[in-house]
Length: 159
Image (tube, rainbow, N blue to C red; front, side, top):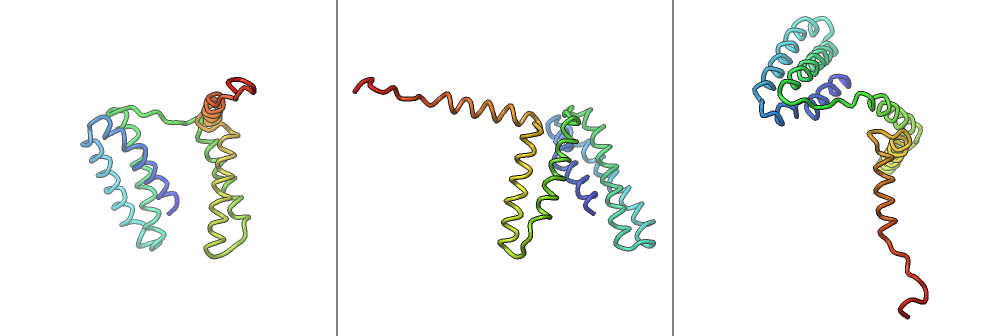
């Protein structure tokens, strides 16, 4: 189910933007139709054999196929760059965050808050350390602009 959600999110929040930016939403209709056909076909085969797990498998397969189809069809509408070189670093940051969140004990609301805080901190620090999507250079540039904008008062001038 998590893999199916990943593929659905990738398509909805990244790949499908090509159809809107390229003003070709009719191509998105074909991608969605293919996903529906694949999901229905695999559901007829997998649900009787595996039950709810079969349904999750069918949706995952359909979303993976629709991601591939959206990536190809999206190139015709509006080519969106894929950050392939950043993907392993992002995955590593996510893995570090998952380990850190899992290591934080706690239950209830306060435990959740501490896990969220640790997760944000670990992911942010590791993303800057690994320079994900040039984050480190951007942070240094912003900080240097803010530091240079402040003027240091000279003692004894205009007193």
